[in-house]
Length: 177
Length: 304
Image (cartoon, rainbow over all chains, first blue to last red):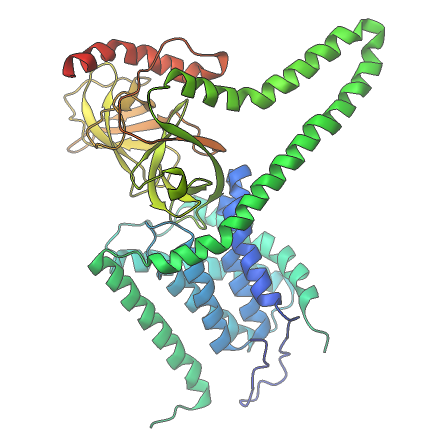
């Protein structure tokens, strides 16, 4: 899963990061566990979307759209599975597939190492993720859903702040070139 | 076989993966299937960690309370020794123990009070991953006699119902979930109407006519009409009443603290619970609701 992206279209100046063995799988499982467990004791942390942050991070770092979207799909489907039967399999799966693809594609074209860029991208991806969720609910599930609320803006900002620090920590799992 | 340029390959893969998931969604809706196998695997993989985490948090909490808290107490003891501190230390220790056992005592008292009703205590070990649903995971499953659609409560009031059962864990749909619905009635006026969630902390009472008189502060209890929850369990309190079209807009604050659930009770049958007035200090809420229900128990007996 950690293979380098083959840039044949003049984008070789962007560095592709590889990760320590099992880092991707380990971080993914840990993120899902923390997401399921921590809000039991700290309910306000339920606004945190760690699976989304992880999808964005590995997409931006590995810069391979194919592996990015596949990882997004796996994380999304696992999130669906752990969200109870009221959430059909595919709801988060579709959203995170798209986010994984977008993050990988953007990561292959822009330098996304600066904290400000990471903050802005996380806010944008959070919004896109929410938009896809609402669209899926409305179009495919015929469920009414609000497009935007103040809580979503707060959640986007909070997730972006956490992402900046978490990304810096996850950078340490990269293999040294 | 046609080949795609490498730069389009990922785009084709994206389209294929999304299409596959759209089909997966459509199949679930059409067949009302929930992809149980994938869920069993996912829950089975995560629940041991959740159990371990829950156990670990319990140990850390115990250590904190029994060791560090006592260290603080001993420092305080030194400071207050000049003021006849021994009695105060004793009191502090008693208060610490009382606080620690309050929740469990409330559960125990509730169970003692309803010995004839089969029920089982459970610990909350996880919550739904994401904000799309409001569910919690408990550490009891089919091996403990849990079945789908069993009612889940705390001594304070209704929590939700069992929606998925695995061997050693179960998932509970909280009242606040968008898909949640429960037969309810106003305790005083006995007006019946379903109460449901909308993903927010407050519940919504849906079909009360504008002509009906509903007061803010009025208690809401279960009606038993959904054949899941026994009648007259405390559900919540009306916090807001507005005229609407065609029905009143009524917001209800749940009696149980759904934001902070650590232990719950699963009712193993739908037998009505005989709610009593006497309750320990930690159960003021349910006692209040119990007073309302005392007036309805006679009706229940008549029905029998």
